[in-house]
Length: 129
Image (cartoon, rainbow, N blue to C red; front, top):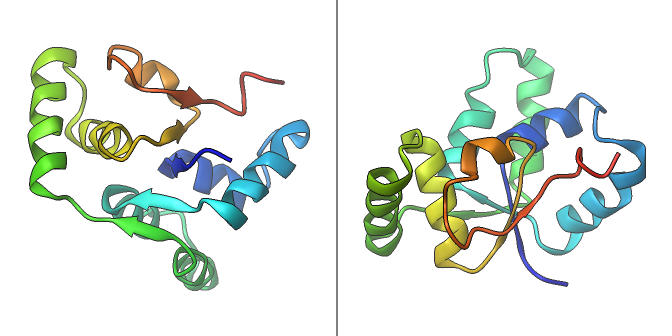
């Protein structure tokens, strides 16, 4: 199995039981075998304002199972190049740079946010519905 980097929106949809039924097994397999997120996703997901107190604790516990990739100099340099060439938001540029730097497939529903990033491989479980 190739390694995946999971975007924030996928975590939110998973917690809301909103992943398409026909893709749920694949998403859960990713969580079991290749659960990696950017530190940006960690911040966005834990900082999400719709968490209940219990939901926040569940989210923290869930993310404890993930490999969280911090921003290295290489990721920062790549994010700068992506921002300059693709005109995407800073968090998305860091997530894209993390994915490219470590050769991950990015799991996201927001593929349009990343469409101008060359060589970025995306898996959108909502396109397979």
